Length: 313
Image (cartoon, rainbow, N blue to C red; front, side, top):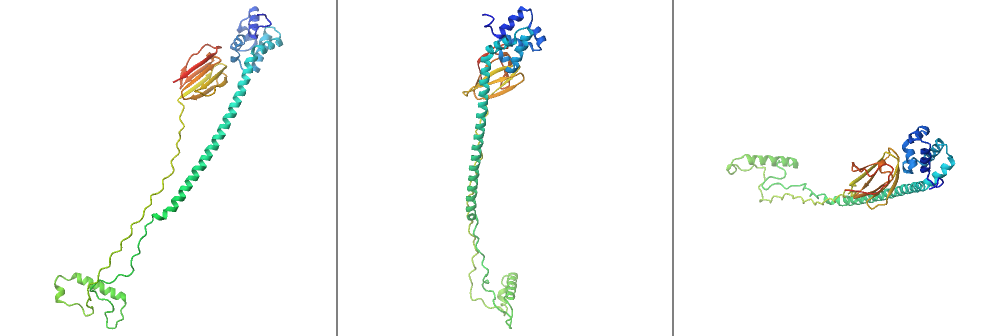
């Protein structure tokens, strides 16, 4: 491979070694972390920051070695163009996924609102039916008679010669006579005739029957609405990724579409699934992997791509 066709990383490495410089020497001149310089020489662009910063690294590296910066930038564009084009596609994919998620959330809110309106309408309908049948639950009580005929054999009407006593006086005399009758021992009534004011009984009058209240009719109340049933099942698998170095990842949960993401040092992301995950790491040694809180891996050294990693129960 000629110098013209070499990648930017091979070109930098060859010139650096020719001048007898180490990566640390270049790092001290450019103030660029040695890991980024190694990633640039190895063509591991996934470990580099965004494209704008990577271009700045290339210019600084070329300047420290006394090389033409524009020629170095051309080599970088040829070497890293495919990777950054893919990153742009990933960014567009993430934007589409976010828009799809927002649409799903909006549709979910509409469905929930419609369900709430339907439940409210059903509650109002049932309350109206209960109000309509409530009067039938009340008992119909008979009215007691206001007039009670006097007992048989007791005096009625006026007892005085003037005949001016009222019905209230008659009631008092009747009650007094009843107490006197109850106070006399057996056989006394035969020797002492009844007072002259009392009229002999024409015969024994039947005692009026006691009123019997009707049984109150009862109506079973309508049943209430069933409570909401939440059928949502919690995911049984939780995947946590934490980047210690820059890396792109591809995660497929169960049979869903794969999700791609670019993680920078310190960033964390979480996915959930019911059965399994299929994982691809652009920088196997630069990502910590945990499944349900348990560390997984390692899946390879830094700078290497680990594909089709199956994580399941």
